[in-house]
Image 1: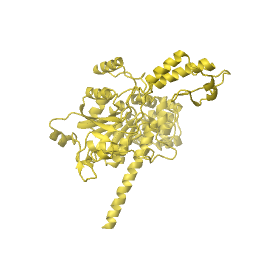
Image 2 (image 1 turned 90 degrees about the horizontal axis):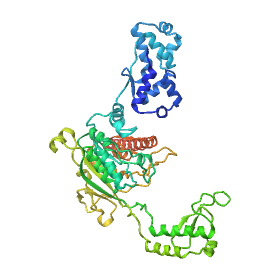
Image 3 (image 1 turned 45 degrees about the vertical axis):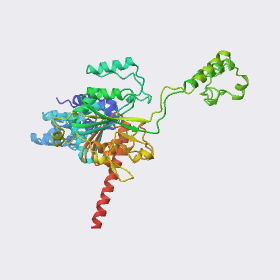
Image 4 (image 1 turned 180 degrees about the horizontal axis):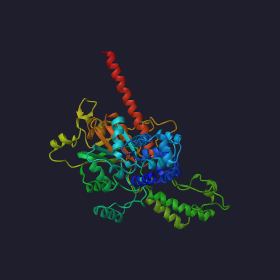
Length: 517
């Protein structure tokens, strides 16, 4: 007996999807998925599910399910009426099934009546992705990097340019020791309890060596990997890459001017503590309580308190005039305020003004020249990235990039993110919600640095797709992976919009050139 439902359930489990996740991607509800997995539902819903799973019907596209049934019937020499009689269904039902309509239960009855077996196979996800790349120059994939990459063959990509999670949280020495000890034994560390300052699930930890091993495998020998990193966690990122088999070749310092120091003034913190205590003593108001005297939430206005520069967000409406006239500080409070003045201006961090781009490479096979001839990878495209100065000189690119002032700008590439590029080509009403998009111009420079035109570039942490945009503008092909449905949709729109823009410009140039001739 044919068990289509069991095969669908097995394939879903293999893809690592829940019924709810599969339903969302197939634009149906979870109850429909559940019905199909027990042999119910309609042919249309079955085809939608098989398409999302990347399955084939005896090697054919799922939309050919009706044709498959017709061929099986004709191969047995049966008429539609004979099949209908044998399966216990009507002739119009058979006609509908052969046209791709009807119910799964009827289809199963017809298949069993013919005495043939139907085989659903999972095609490697890479085959679907690479077909899309050949057609559109890019493909974006929803999923986690490691399982998605496991479907790709070895030596598929020329380079990897990515902005992985920074994992910006506190790393006491005990935690670092646990991470390193776990990685060295070849296992993944459990970052599930870590939360970054972004408070996002995807940024709670750093990419594991097991993920980088998959990237290493699908890169060509000599293929470069460029990965953004924060100064605080770049040491763990490079260790993860080394354990995966990469060589660390360099680091590019990307100078930025819009970083904000995420730290507080110790003196100000102490003044706030003193004033909270004094406010409670003078007015009976507990600043940290949830409600006022009547049990109702009070105003959340920002108030200025008597000590210069001390602000705190009060949960109560407190009139400054009344506080000034009645607030008296005790000797202990006065002593603490003196200590606060002593520690004024002391903080726990500097203003972040640079990020790091780790330059890693999969080791060469043999000599550099031989590797380049065989795999078209292993070198930096220096001439394509020379800095064109106002003095007319084309200088060798350095590992120092950013906004460093006009007196030095002629020596360095200084990218700036344009104000509209983040949301450009998104549908009306959609905005780019990714918190850390990188400038397109900088990504274009990085893509040129490690590839030649026509190369295939990987980004396993795609985000909103800026690397893919850069690839479209630099005549490279692109595969991006991200675990967020929202970012995959944003990236699809952005990359496709920039691709069409580039194609239109090239078409216009070609038309203008033909007209001139």
